[in-house]
Amino acid sequence: MDLVFLGTADFAVPCLKAVCRAGHRVVGVVTQPDRPSGRGKKINYNPVKKAALALELNILQPESIKKPAAVAEITALKPELLVVVAYGQLLPGELLGIAPLGCINVHASLLPKYRGGAPIHRAILAGETETGVTTMHVSESLDAGDIILQAKTKVDSASTVGELHDILAEKGAELLLKTINLLATGVAPRIAQDHNKASYAPLLTKTDEKINWGTSAFNIVNLIRGMDPWPGAFSFWKGKNLKIWNGEIVYLDGSQAQPGEIIAASQEGILVAAANDTAVLVKELQLQGKKRLSAKEFLNGNPMIAGEKLI
Image 1 (tube, rainbow, N blue to C red):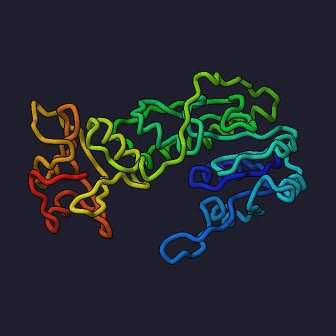
Image 2 (image 1 turned 90 degrees about the vertical axis):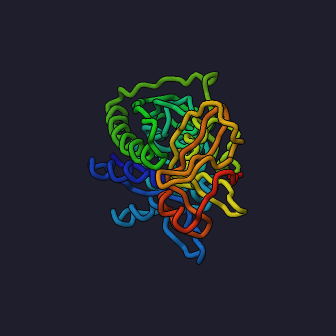
Image 3 (image 1 turned 180 degrees about the horizontal axis):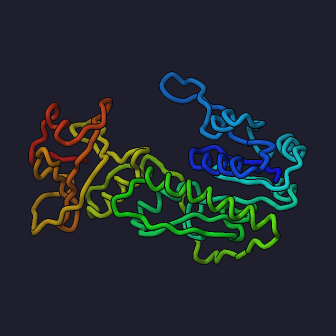
């Protein structure tokens, strides 16, 4: 099958590789323009562009997918199907009807839950024990199109967003191939979403990343693993940014410690009080401008004293 693949982020790479391995002809890869990044503001290719270059595919990088020139360029490729995975722009209505088999999307949640740009982060932040991937027909509204297939996966209580991301990316690739086969044979289901059950997963902000020690340890540990390995949950210690990478829930009995107060610091971890007679045993952390360290390594150069506070 001739298809155009639209994607940008890491999540899309297994899908692109899978359709190529399956023998489909990718007549074009549409991805976001190159952007400067990092301290040196060097131009770095996004993950999909890197994969497309390695696969020697035709690459298109319009600044805006909604511009008539971009629509015309994609239309001229005469694809049978458009596949969208973590592309980063909403497609205009003019594109949705150019391919005989339509336009489909792979989304990292069990729609209608977690529509939007950060479904994996938001699922872990909410403490979900199950999530999955969905293939759907793209509509002009955000992640609101009819569902084709879904695949569920359990979320381990210790899973980080990075670990879950990789699991869902592979599941998404498997589901995409099944979906394409169903579309090709004309038997793909089309199930309308219940919009009344929709929830949203907006992109993260700096406020989302900040630890609020006034909440329960359950919420704080979910935040820590929901920000690992990017962008990192943080607090402040002695006026410096302190990222927390690994934490364990501890239940207390009548503690008088205030939220954020360090109760104890040892090689096993730094025990920090939270709300509702709970605490977080911090096992990995990273001080501003320094490396990520175990609690033991951190305390060797940065002694913490009971009674000090993280804010």
